[in-house]
Picture 1 (cartoon, rainbow, N blue to C red):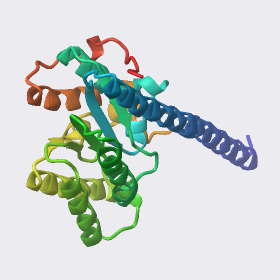
Picture 2 (picture 1 turned 30 degrees about the vertical axis):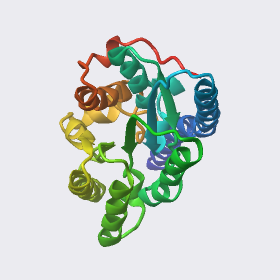
Picture 3 (picture 1 turned 180 degrees about the vertical axis):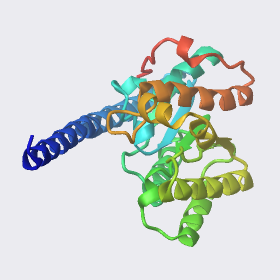
Amino acid sequence: MSKMRTAFLGAGAVIAGSQVIANRAKRVANQRKPFARYWEQSNLAVVSKIHRNREAGIEDPLIFVALGDSAAQGLGAGYVFDGYVPRLAAALADITGREVALINLSVSGAVIPSVLTHQVLSLKGLETQVGIVPDILTCDIGGNDVSYGVDDMLLADYVAALTRSLPEGSFISDVPSFGPGPLGSRAKAISSMIHSYADRDGHHLIELDNFTSSLPLMSYLFRYHATDFFHPNAHAYQHWAQLWLDQIAPTLGAPTVEVADVGPYQPWA
């Protein structure tokens, strides 16, 4: 085989491989709009039902509000209910024996400043405008900040403002591992900031970094990621939900359970 033919074949293989990767990434990206639309409609339905129930003298369910980025939206899972947030809601219903009203205020692509300027304000609006105060509040953020381009001092100010703005006793996660290299170092630096300020402001920390860093690199990459190799997959989200549940259950005076054994999420409204 000539060197020219070999070169063409090699180039063709690279192009074909790049196309496969691009198509796989596109499949996850295509979830963004339908998942967002689902949660927007669900949030409106939940708020409306809480209002109607109160007018009828019906006691509130356990109110669970989630803040965060595309991970809280569930991108990378095959189905919107396979994300860690609805899995956690189902587990909370299981351990408490109560109905759980889930309000998911997360937004795909969110960074810490956008949580402060949009999601936290929405949270405060729920309280002041319709009297809805979460019993459980979770926040996962920081993954998109790894490549956001904000210097460490300003980013630390953002993290400090975020943890100060959340209700005391909220549950906030650090940043999952980005592996070795500069991005990995940046992720760990952001996690360190979250640790420091979450502790200062009396929040509970979910250590996604410790969990993901403990996994063998190839296993983490191929068994815990969606086809875009960035978002978690349904398998990973099950483990994430377990980490959250194990921290939340003691604060509710309830025993934890295996998330894998809990039935599927059933929307309250």
